Image (cartoon, rainbow, N blue to C red; front, top):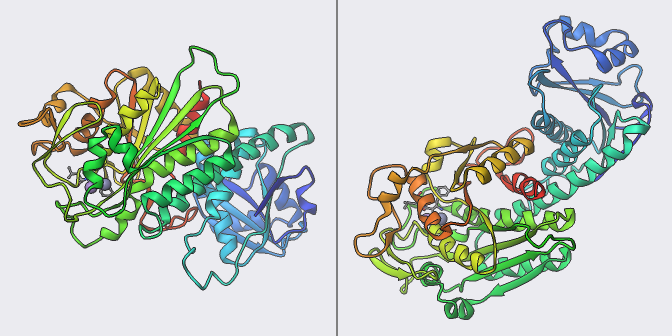
Length: 498
Ligand code: BES
Ligand code: MN
Ligand code: ZN
C-alpha cells in the first residue's frame, strides 16, 4: 500500500472513495465546515440525510454515498467522529483505520482521506500513516485462500495547503516508520510456536538488526550458562528447544557523555504451557503470544533505529519455551539467578518474572541507566483492567510520570497500579531469598511486578503488564483480530523525549 500526501482540491480527485469525518454537534449538526462545502456541491443531500437522522456524527457511524454530485470520487464515505471536544489523535487513528477496513471489505483499491478544517497538522498526518498501516495488517499468512485478493493499493492524504505540506509529509513519514515497526511486532506475535522457537526469534531479530543498522548479540545456551543465568535456564530446562538471550543495541552518533541509556527488556516465552504447574487445555493455544513483550521491544528499537533519537537504547529479550519435559524444574526447586539471589520456584507457571530477572541483571551489566520491561506477565491484570488498559508499575515517580505522559501522547491506554512496600512481603521466601509467587493474598499483578523490581534494584524501572492488551480476541473496526502491538508507540515516544 502506497500512502502519499497531495496538495490539490479534493473535489477533483479521481478515486474509489473520498473519506472524511463528521462531528456530533448539537448546534451546527454534522454538516459543517468543509463538509458543508461538500454538501453544497451535492445539492444539500448531506443536510437531508442529517435531518432524516441517518447522518449524526456518532463515533464510527458509516454513511456511504455512491456517485456523489460535485466530486470526481466514485463514492463519498463519511465516518462519525463523535463530539468535537473529545476529538484527538486516538479518535482520528480509529476512524481512519476503520474507514480503510470498511473500504477494503467493499473491494475499493484507492481512496483519499480529507482532513477537516484546522486539522492539517504533522500529528494528524502521523496518526493517519499509523492508522492506515496498522489497519491494513491481516492475520491470514497461513491461509492458502486469501480474502479474494482484496487489497488497498493507495491512500492519499488530502486537505493540506502548500504551506502545511512539509509538516504533513514529515508526520506521515514518522507514522509509517512506527506503524511498520508495530506490524513487525504483530507479525512475530502472530507466529505459532512451531514456527517461532527461541532460535528462530533470534534469527529474525538478527535479520531485523542487520537491516535496521543495529548492533546485535545473541547469547546461546552455552553462553547463558557461563553467565550463570540460572533463572532463565531453570525455565528453559524443561524444553528440548534451547533458550536465547537477544541483545539489540542502538547507538546514536551524537550521544552526550552523561545521557541516559535506556534498557528495553521484553519477555519472550515462545510458548507457555505452564511447565509442571501445567495450564488447563482450554485456551492454551493463546500462549503463543507469551512472547509479545519481547516482540514489542524488538519492534520499538527497529523504529528507533530509523527515527534516530540522541540516546543509546539497549534491547534485551530473554527467549525460551516453558515446557513440562523430563528435565523440567519442579515446584519447590530453588534456583540461583545471575544476580546471586536465590529463588524458590513455587509455581513453574510464574516463569516470565524468572527470565526477566536475568535479563534485567544483564541489561544493568551492559550499562543501562533506566529500564522499561514489557511482559504478558499475569492473568490477574486481565481481571483488574480487562483488555482496555496496560498495567503500569514503577519504582521512580519522575520516570513513571514521563512514561504515562508518553502513553497519553501516543494514544495508548495505560493505568498505574500501586507498589506499596506491603506487597513486597508477599514474595519473601521461606527457604530462599524470594519466592516466585505471592502467598495467596491476591494482588497477583503487583506481586509479579515486585518480583521483577527486586532485580532492577535502584535503577529507575517501569514494568508494563500487557497480558490483557497484547491480543485482541475479537476484531475491532480498525484492527484485525489477534496481536495489537500495544506499548510500542508509547516506548518510541518515551525514548524520543530524552
Ligand atoms: N503468560 C502467563 C500470563 C498470561 C495469562 C498471559 C493469561 C496472557 C493471558 C504467565 O506466565 C502466567 O502463567 N502467570 C500466572 C502467574 C501465577 C502462577 C502466579 C497467572 O497469571 O496465572
Ligand atoms: Mn506462565
Ligand atoms: Zn507466561
